[in-house]
Image (cartoon, rainbow over all chains, first blue to last red; front, side):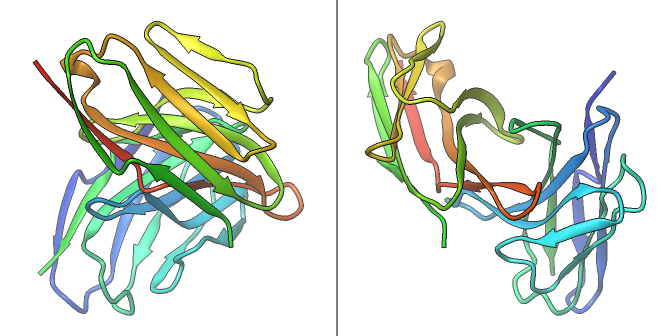
Length: 110
Length: 114
């Protein structure tokens, strides 16, 4: 089954802790993206990567970090520097201009 | 800064009504405009538009792009309760070299009542 997987589905963390969200795809897509969605808002781009070992900041990169060591994987770390980390996080991948989304991770920081 | 504005932000209709959702944009290096439907979780792809004036259709949904006026509409005819969702408009731009990214609007929340 081809697709994009994100884990976990729900994640709870205490304030001040770093947390890493997983995103894996077996679609052989070159590009991968991380978005954040808050209630009543559209998706805002955090980081994106067009090829392995290269990535660019999106519109709201502060307090986040990523790595792209393998084509299939693009993990996102939410650091303690992110002031409002509670949100729904979506990962996407694309081979052209259409992006395909994973099921998302809902992060709650207590 | 790239901007995508959707209107209305929310809409309540009765089954059978026809609705028109709007998306305007101001971006640099336009490549495409995409519409997505988001029910509970991940957005699902509806349409991608790159050329002005060519309508794309899928069942009761259709969409068209006007690159001169920087505008797109999504039409849904004979709405059903299953059409209730957030509809997201996104504009794809070249962001330097071979880099490409999407900028999303805030979405239109459509509620279809029986």
